[in-house]
Length: 413
Length: 141
Image (tube, rainbow over all chains, first blue to last red; front, side, top):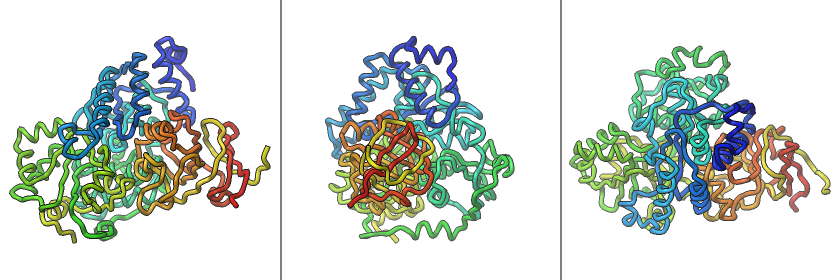
């Protein structure tokens, strides 16, 4: 890689040991992907919680902090694995909770803004067209690339942190024009009335084209999709397909027409998605013992509008005895929902609202599953239905209203 | 030096030369979705390698699934002593590479032919990133 004079100084240790380590690491990753240079970034977003980092990761962070690692650009944190107010009720491990608190303190000492949200793009920072950032998780990246026209690769925790320490990232993948062009076409003929329907689209397309560099172009969209619908579509594409970008003709900024979105690429596939295809997704889930004692609205965290609409569906109803229902959201959304009365409505129905976390990364989740006798996990999020498998849940995707009805009746059809 | 029984070429590679027992998967991989990160066993119900322990193995996966988790998770499983020796991907994503480099686990992407055509689970193989080759040194009995 060609380095600027400043980058060479960094690599020579003239800006300190942690900067040297960070840029050396970034250069290795960049060279793997054939990057020719670094590109300056304005913002980073990192995953960093004890469930995924373990003691080794915490040790690394502490070591970096002792060496005075300091982030030079704004960097926020993704959802974590503890809402400390609920750790006891959920039976989470107190010693791991202390480690989580240590991670938060250590990151703050390194100038990290611990927002603990996976919907930073709805709540914290919205990069503009062409702006280079270094984000993770995958849902944030695909939203940044597709809806904002910003430029990011999937950046894992250590990579996003390194990017914030050096203020740059290797220029490969979605920082480059050539990878941002559509590679396949998807014609949307289905009605797509619910968030789960959009997630189902992501599942259909993502499963068929598991490739980071696959870029679907959605054409024939029947109406203007809402931000939360694009969020569920993107999260599912990223989850099932490991994809980092999509276009939607007439909707997203790099797709004024199908031809522009494809940028001269000949599509490798053309998919048509009808109502019948969406129904087939719902019909594909094995209901196992038909247990309905766990319903989850999470992955990604709920926006304030999602939260309000869900509160309206739960208003005046009660969660079925023996069933547990979880919502996860950003602390700012929960605060606003509290002020606006949505929180009371949803909690009065018997729903547990967690902040700063995502359900699938909760510490101790496998043990929680066993202890609570959870077999099935029912959700309106196609992403979480896919992602939680290692904890051995049987997962079932259903539309939002169906999820609420299942939660309140204890019956699944 | 052992006789080389078969050779697979890879497109991109990084990390030290390693040898180990091959695990050849027909399904992609994510440490978050598929792996019990406390035992090293593929635990996702229905995964084609469900029940397989990947500790010290040379793991061949056609694709990467997800996911941001690998950035820290590979370092974590290495720290716990349950990491594989190498990840060999058909196509991968940046986080798998970021995670493997951070953890010091050898990683490669792209192959000259599907591994199943010349490598079987249980074969003893060597991954040489500098030469961008994977060599079969011993067949499973």
